[in-house]
Structure formats: structure tokens, C-alpha cells
Amino acid sequence: MWNYEKRLQYPVNITQTNPQIAQVIISQFGGPDGELAASMRYLSQRYTMPYREVAGLLTDIGTEELAHMEMICAIIYQLTKDLSPEEIKSSGFDKYYVDHTLALWPQAAGGIPFNACEFQSKGDPITDLTEDLAAEQKARSTYDNILRLVKDPEVADPIRFLRAREIVHFQRFGEANREDCSKSKHTKYNH
Image (tube, rainbow, N blue to C red; front, side, top):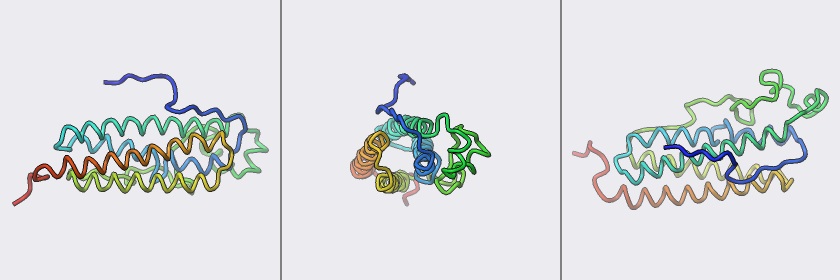
């Protein structure tokens, strides 16, 4: 089932550390609208999706979200690699550092750790696809917010790529909701 290529979906080559920006971008790793939540949402929902095509779509997008998580982690790692204790303290990265050193740990920008309550898997195709549509828009909004704060092109370019993919995923979920779920009575509980 898996064919993993040891390269990022879009290159991440950051030459200047910036722990302040890393603290913002980390939300797309472990925040409520981040890539970890998206991948877990879609990969969980696929099992109860009654339409093969939509289950396949959830698998495709869920695994792509894992690739996006890998990109976000690469960005954070490159922004924090080899920081000195002075840089850690002066940037405000010291609170994170105390618990995790420079390792990657999923949390929101506000410091709230990742929690499975941040995504839903209901088992109803229309409910789940509506959740997915909203999730993609929330992720796009978060990327928009990041781009308002980040001006370094080495960081902004991969963020723009990720934002564009959120739009594509939104469109694909919308098509699935309209085409596949409207074909038949969507649930076995209809009376």
C-alpha cells in the first residue's frame, strides 16, 4: 500500500533560523486546524465511508496530509536547528525548549498540545464530508494568517504551496459531497 519517497512534496530549504516564526508555524503541526489533525481525520473517516471512490479520496488526501505534516516539521526543524541558549531565551522559545529541547512535538501556537478532540469522525458521509470541507477552509485561513506574519521567502514559499493544496482538497471534498453522496440514500438509517 505504501510507497514512500524520501523527499518532501515541496522543497524546504531555510538558511536562517527564526524560532519566533517556528512558534507560529507549529500550529500547522499540532494545532486544531493542522496537518496532523487533518491526516487523522481523513484516515479515520475512510473506514465507514460507504462509497469506494470517496473512501479512496479520503485515503489519498489523508496520506498527502502526512506529507504536509512532514513539510511543516522540516520548516520548524530548520527554523530552530542549532539555536544557542541565548537565542532560545531571547526569542521566547525557552518555554517550549524546557519541555522538548529542539525536538518536534505537536502543539498549537498558543502552546496547547495536540488532542484527538480536534477532529471528528462521525460515520455519516455527508456529516464527515462537511466536516472535511470546513477543516480545509480552517487550514487555509491558518496559512493565510501565517503568510501575513512571515515575509521570508524561504519560509513563505512552502507555506504558499501548502495553502494551495488546502484549496484543492476543499474542491475535491466538495465534488465528492455533491456527486457521490447524492447518488443514493446516503445512510442505512433512512426510514
